[in-house]
Length: 472
Ligand SMILES: Cc1cc2nc3c(=O)[nH]c(=O)nc-3n(C[C@H](O)[C@H](O)[C@H](O)COP(=O)(O)OP(=O)(O)OC[C@H]3O[C@@H](n4cnc5c(N)ncnc54)[C@H](O)[C@@H]3O)c2cc1C
Image (tube, rainbow, N blue to C red; front, side, top):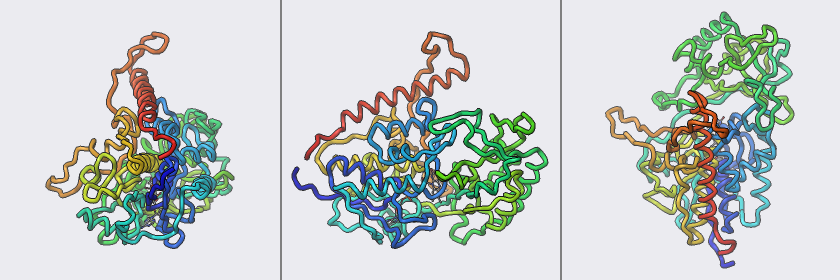
């Protein structure tokens, strides 16, 4: 094989790890620059690559009826390192794919370290990458170090790169009162690694719920610093107290919804429920599902112990607020994720304006494939927009309609999870496989399945089209 110059990947998180793997798998050498443990972020705790900073869930694994499940499946077919490592270390979590975070990150780190074409350098890239690097994938994530984010800001002319995310608390399992809380997945759904009894459910009656909402609204919150005050939240990651302020029933229809959960003490669905999901393989730590918060730590302990079953809860980690960083990608990036102003710089992961572990890794997968194909002189068009991968990249590089010049001065491009709304519609099937006529909701479900089936056929065709010959 002729000598090929390396591609530099900056940031060894979900996106950077996946990008490095894809590049090396295409026969191109990679230098992966990760600043931890020399320098850490506000949310990371270890020196492992692909560390999960909050929840341990990759969300639904159902490719037929759920868009993120579909994205999982497409990534598996594209040889994703993140999906392969997640599959090896999955935990029971109903219909979701949850992973043992330590074993998962260890697996990713080991596979990358063992790859003969990958060199890992533990250094902060504290400014724009040097010109001699020629081809770079920047995947430094929502907590990009200050030196690099201000250099990117200067290069792109984007002063406004930051917003906020909040993280949920984790509880020691043996401090949960299981005479009140019970194990059950919603509607007993077993999912990829579950038993149908994977969540610990803490029930509330009406009075308990109302008192809890009052406490959330009155609870003391972390105060914003001056520059943080006007930073908007991403709607998919709202703190619970902000949801409570939006309406007294908002939580009951959101993270605290009781449907499909039968309290064994009453035989009925409770008025509201708080769900805990297993967070480590040992089963000793459980996280509060959807309970991101910016309440002060002492307030979290006081208020969350009002939840029946959690009156003696011991917290392994409390919730918190963190900065996020993302580009105005529809304006700044081309269809191959290159910065229009400096095409040797390619971006991947959350910094491109996708949201979530899986989505970040998915954009890393594409950036890695684009960079490797370019290095080897082969064309690599983006996947068609009928696929989840194609729809996601389409959203950040062109699909979103920008309204950046409106009077408010706010930019309209916001981080996005994968969802069926990003994929082109398909005619709703009117009959099922046996020719039986479908009604109302059944047709909506059948439509999702039809979109997913089309997506998998199209991703297979794309993968066949862009696969590189074995040697350069
Ligand atoms: C606090 C918080 C909680 C979140 N919770 C969830 C959640 O529960 N579920 C979910 O799906 N998504 C969550 N997200 C959103 C997002 O999906 C994750 O942050 C995801 O890890 C993003 O992947 P990434 O590869 O883009 O960035 P990361 O995984 O953060 O990786 C970026 C890497 O770059 C390194 N780095 C940064 N700057 C430099 C530099 N200058 N030089 C070298 N290395 C550098 C960092 O150390 C890090 O390892 C959360 C985000 C935050 C901030």
